[in-house]
Length: 228
Image (cartoon, rainbow, N blue to C red; front, side, top):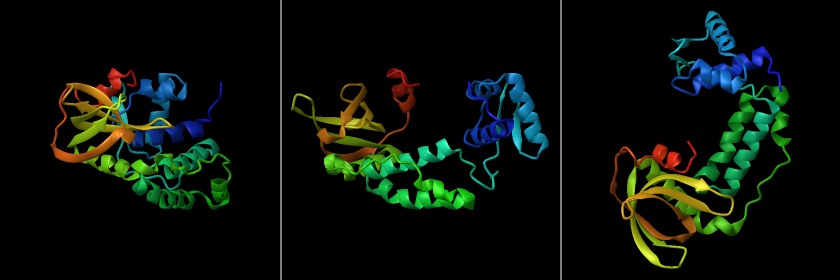
């Protein structure tokens, strides 16, 4: 078992609390492989050191979103994960995300202590750009926008048997499977969740807007496929 230094554990607690609205001591204990008593002691010490931790035992904890740390203290593995992840986005994401990769990486470099900035070029895991997804690049950007805007979509879709069908769907999320991209959606025609391959979408256009309804949300979809 890997033993995490207390200083590293305290830093991880701070980062975890900053990233979420409310987190219980039990969740933190499970995440960091320590006892809840240890978490309670760490929370107390963080508060005494001036970190604005809010909450109480049995309810949960959070840190005000306005609180900022002065430096990003990534471990070597965390930094490698970021670099490799950004390389994969540049290779397989749509045009908008690809454009965001370089400035995002620049910000990570500037946030690192000067003595560690050369580590950005150390990961030897690459994701070469291939043309297999070039025909759906613009569609990826379109779907990302419609998911954010909660736009209902009218799809002209070709199924796995080659039959063309018209669908009216609520787009929920995009999934990348390495070889294909899929759109997770609530299909009004089938009255259920469906996944649509992007390379089989002939055309799509906005057709109104939708509000979340119980049983038809992304969280419901993830539960239905055992991912939540």
